[in-house]
Amino acid sequence: MPYEIKKVFASLPQVERGVSKIIGGDPKGNNFLYTNGKCVILRNIDDHSRFVNCVRFSPDGNRFATASADGQIYIYDGKNGEKVCALGGSKAHDGGIYAISWSPDSTHLLSASGDKTSKIWDVSVNSVVSTFPMGSTVLDQQLGCLWQKDHLLSVSLSGYINYLDRNNPSKPLRVIKGHSKSIQCLTVHKNGGKSYIYSGSHDGHINYWDSETGENDSFAGKGHTNQVSRMTVDESGQLISCSMDDTVRYTSLMLRDYSGQGVVKLDVQPKCVAVGPGGYAVVVCIGQIVLLKDQRKCFSIDNPGYEPEVVAVHPGGDTVAVGGADGNVRLYSILGTTLKDEGKLLEAKGPVTDVAYSHDGAFLAVCDSSKVVTVFSVADGYSENNVFYGHHAKIVCLAWSPDNEHFASGGMDMMVYVWTLSDPETRVKIQDAHRLHHVSSLAWLDEHTLVTTSHDASVKEWTITY
Image 1 (tube, rainbow, N blue to C red):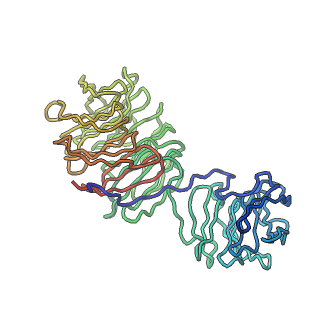
Image 2: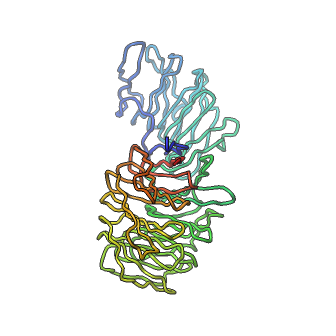
Image 3: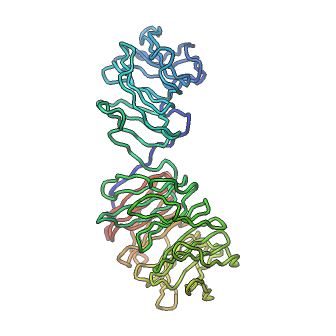
């Protein structure tokens, strides 16, 4: 097998404010569905005043509980359906309750509420045993919960999964974080001897992942407010990201903290960013190409005569390749604080979707919507070196291996190919790399470890062997 899945950093549940992740019963609050032996019973019960979000039988079958948007939890006899009690009296929570879960011994109940708390109830004496405050923001609302053996879990509106600590209700034992919206881009970087993966999503969040353990967190502070379109790391260890909020952000990978100082506001929406040595960054926007120097906008090409889509900077820092929707790649030179059009066109086979220089600067790879990757030789005046066919749909992204002999491509066909530069027929094909959505971005951790991501909101590591 030329490849194998190494790790999967799974997506979080997709959540929506005010919507339970575990549901049951009639939404109007008049009917409840439950089982009794081999029968399914539909009863008319009108105790709740608002929507019922969850109905759960106790494991021993003697009772069942209902939770509603009215903030109440009712306990019923599991055999005759008669109401036993209302937990907490008039109200169990100050907000709507979206999920409940019984303890394995059927004596306690865990509840999750929009009032940003979870609670453990002793059903026999109708009292609260523990209250877990989960925060103060809207995203801290609790939409789901589970009592599994000794583990108590809750799901926040943010999508975070919380391991509740019965001995210390004020702080979860562990919080599993990640993306709950589609991931648009990723990049990798070594920091403190460890390799980290940085991923940006549709909702503007940027997460960093330990490539070995999968542990991750998001950057602190207020960052992008819209889709993160592209990210890269410059020579000073800063993450440079461009977003549909019309900004380019510079974020220290040592601090991982957004700062209002590292924000460049652009006139139009950026699509792609690439960096070069000396503090340079080139941003491709809608109908515009912008040159940044030391976090400042110093030059722009307005209305270049074509629609620029993607950009790459040669490792030497002197040449910029811009791919266009017209199926051509144009070369520009960086001259101080300006960009000069060299008047050289490289023809792709269709509208250009990504461009990437090899790490040694010897080759430029170009992929397009016509399902083709074309590699040009820089030393030979950007003459065509080879053409690579295999994808069944538009290719979306490219990345060169550190060995400069292999590169990977990902497409709308949900496939990833790892190509050999000297022989287009020698390739590794990863079919259905992401089964739910197309591959949106990829990067190499080392010569044999490829990272991919997708709109399925997951990040995967692959071990590649040749």
